[in-house]
Length: 393
View (tube, rainbow, N blue to C red):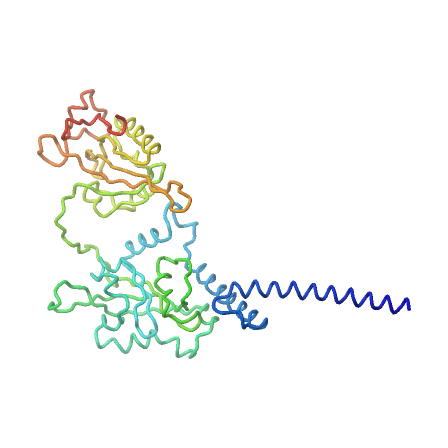
């Protein structure tokens, strides 16, 4: 009898341990099923595990693609975001980014296509690439875009991860304001590779992931697009610019809280002579006259205390080694989630002479200290002078 009781006790202990293990397993299955999209009430345990495995496989593929297109920090300046750095590189290379399906439908095109070819991105997206090519090049380019389908009718993840770069030349139609004008084409070079895309939101990769994540797209691994950098075969040394009837009296910039340049808009070069990439990462104080530094530092301190303000009139050294008078309105932008200050947005205005003659007041020679009669160098409307700092009144 003692042995029978011992056996029954052992079986009871085993059954209890087994039940506990099954209960824990069922709890984990329920937690996994609650994370899956759609109706999961009728799913058995095997289906739940299969869907979780499929999701993890897709997630690993997306993560691998994101790592490929992420810009390495060791050669990208730390003060520039991926998008800003990509835009600078595209401008320097006379190029733009494009994402096209295998049948030629344009999913995404970067803003830098406008100064190069005269097209707005919104006018190009959702159209077919072949519409912008000469008719004699249609078949050849279509064959290029569908070339991966010749390797396999259903591209495998291994193929998409492999070296499937594609490079070809063709002509693209230039944009024109006059529809009756005879079409002109630019000889360009495509360099890119095929990537799979899905309908799930994912972190932006140089700005085009959000354009690829559309509700009408099918899941990852089912659709493939060609993502390429498009460059002019013959670089434009003299870029065409639209003539806009606006006075070159002001420009905007963005600074870090330490007053280093993060952004400079297109209106600045005609005024100060510097291109955006020449000042990015440098301190604004490097360009100010030595006699104005103390007042500007006090204005900066006032801005950090109150979040917005207006500077005194000060002298800025242009690239041509000339002094111009500026006055700046500025404010601090804050992060939308944690309310921490992010950067400073500035609008710089050129200060006119009190006599109204000329755009710039008579400047002192670069590097030279001015005499004590600084208030007489320039006057602004309302009796304000160069030595007056509104932020400190």
